[in-house]
Image (cartoon, rainbow, N blue to C red):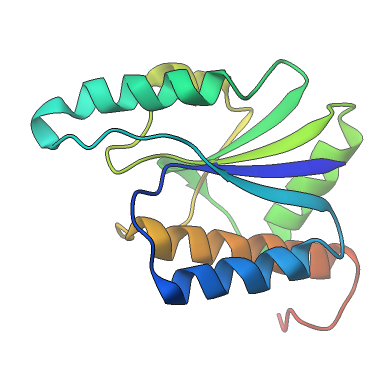
Length: 156
C-alpha cells in the first residue's frame, strides 16, 4: 500500500533534511512511502484563515475518496506507538489505495480537512515547531512498522 505524508513546511534546515532522508529510507523498507510538501502562503497571523483555506485547497487537489486520511493535529486523540501500529494495519486492511498522513500548517487546518480525516491524532499536548513535529511523526511511523513486523526497535 502506498503511503504519503503531506506537509506545509516553509523553511529548510539541514538537520531536518537529514532526518527526513534517514526516516524515509527506513520506512521505505516496509511501505511505498513518500513526502510531498505542498504550497503555503507567506502571510502573518492576521491572515491565518486565508492561509488555512489556501492550504486546504492545495491538499484537496492531492487526495481523493480512495485515500485513508490520518490527520496529526492538536485536536486529535493522544495515542501510544502500539496504537499507531494498529491503526496502520487497519488502514492497510481497509481497501483504500493509500494511507495519507497530514501535518497542517502553522495555523492548523480547516474544519473541512478535519472532517475529511478518518483518524485525528495528537503528537503532543505541547506545541511543536513544524519541523520537529514532522520529525517526531516520521520516527513514530517507522516505529509503528517495526512494531507491526516484530523488529527489535521498540522497547516497551
